[in-house]
Image (cartoon, rainbow, N blue to C red; front, top):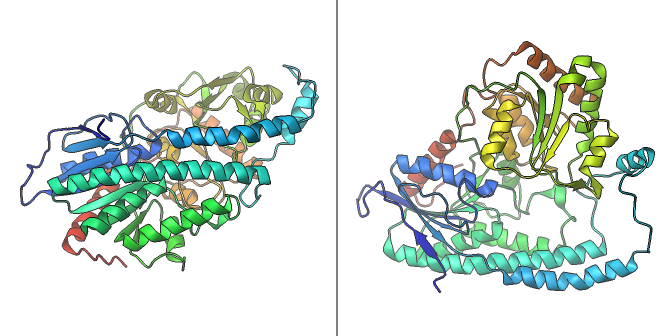
Length: 472
């Protein structure tokens, strides 16, 4: 069986044209229906084709939407590392079950006082908290499985890439990650063909992310740091998603001295004319609630808003869309009930991207939680820019998210500032009552992805003229 199936689209630029420009893109996630990592290059590929580029994409995404001028080559993912990981983890799970004392199961509906005590005792994960021995063992097994799967995929992707380089003349190789181990494809292809290699990081990797030091298994940190150094020694440019991440990387003596630039993410769909729902004051959180987030700060603020204004009590609707069924072992529905919000809250499983975007258009307040580090920007921030509801961005000041928010006239609110979080909800409610929605959050289009495509176009053009590009 062939290791890669090719989906061909009609090129805009005629193959062999001396004025044509062609890049080989390696993007593990790719396409508008895939993970968030796929949106960045799916959109930029479309824009770059309009600027005269032809693009061949090596991806793990199955059958992404065809684009004219773009050819995709699907390289399947190996499944044996995950099977191996599950087999290795089963003895640990059995030992854990034996170590747990027998107890009477919790009642389906616990006593309200006991439920609130358990909720208030929760401690969201924070960087630097370290890991237990069992977590280190489990983390090492998971990291080894991820590494094996990534290396296996990278080897197959490299073979496909080498075959493509015999058919076409490329101006550059671009590798978009995470998973960051796929940068090995760019390293191998550049080493064996001499083509310039651009490393595009959507998220930070290992070196310089000191917030997470000691939280990952030592073996995983060691291997990741080694591969990060190895691949950067070969790349001609390292592209970061925020200026904060780029500056942090520039200050790391362990990283090779290569040119670095910042090309942020963005949104694709232009702002629409839709206004928030005039019948219900909708507060929307759309996305997964990770272990480092604290949903209690949002629930408390919604409770306090409803208690402060009878109109808010009647009209508020809290929407938790695409969230897990529980948080740290407590059902999310029980948490909502404990804060007295069960009569105004809708919890729904994952929905399509189209449904999520429509829900964002109806919301009067849109909520996002920042990362536990200062370097990246959550993708939903960009989605929220195209609509008109008030932004409630929960995170520390001085981060990359905070810097981006200030460019459109707002800022983040620390989760410890409960008065500040409530003030944002109150401001959103006042706007909703007055129907004050003159324009989208990013009315000037500062963060539209077309600007990012233009920046990448200029970078690639300069790279073609000067292969040993110096950007600093």
